[in-house]
Image 1: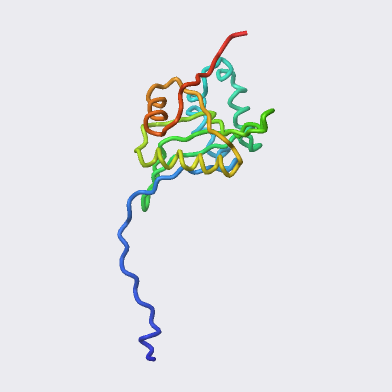
Image 2: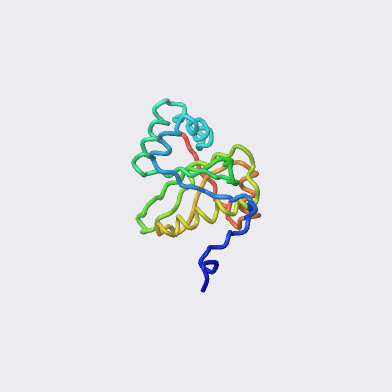
Length: 169
């Protein structure tokens, strides 16, 4: 054996691969730091109600995130030296209900622009994995956006037969 045999080879140059899509769950501390950037997007994506116009309402959302009752996620595309945020989601694990079932509620979905199809798949799979890890049986959300409804039903195999029912008291 010679000293040349002990010299490590120089690894070949690696060309940058395709961008990496991800749905990243943020810690409560990260959300707190970035809250000024998130607050208006989350507020605009909440189900319609006059309560969201109350200044305390968004403070309640942030407090729920800080307590771990709500989770905030961001949908990203990362390159070698870049990160682009398409939007995100706020989720809540509900239950167990009287039936003993827990579900993942998509509390809010905020998108700055329509994400590429591969990112949509990553988002759905990341949320499914999170739901399974937390013993949830289903994922639920509410939307009256026809594009989202079509995406969920036609491309993701979801069901939009049920609608959120709202009545004033």
